[in-house]
Image 1 (tube, helix red, strand yellow):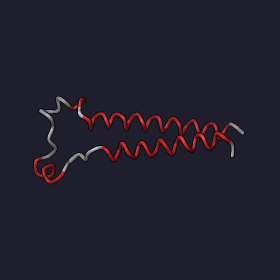
Image 2: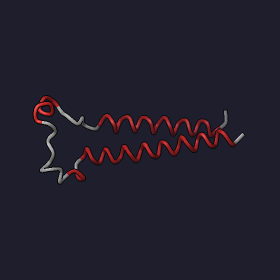
Image 3: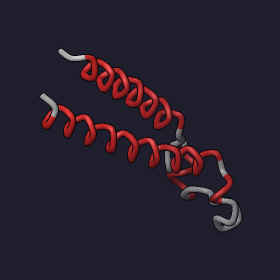
Image 4: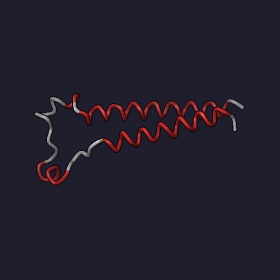
Length: 83
């Protein structure tokens, strides 16, 4: 195996661990019994949606998944064309 196999592999392992941690930090959509009975509680009609911690974690998850996809695609192309 060449050196870049180890580099891409280690980057992908670290990225997948970070994505897993960020996803596990997010709260569920319906929390506890109150979510079942009354539905999710929005902060005054969702006015503060962009400022909540959960929405920031959701945006971070989307960015991390996009970066992960680009790294996987780059690794595939390098492994395919570099001999």
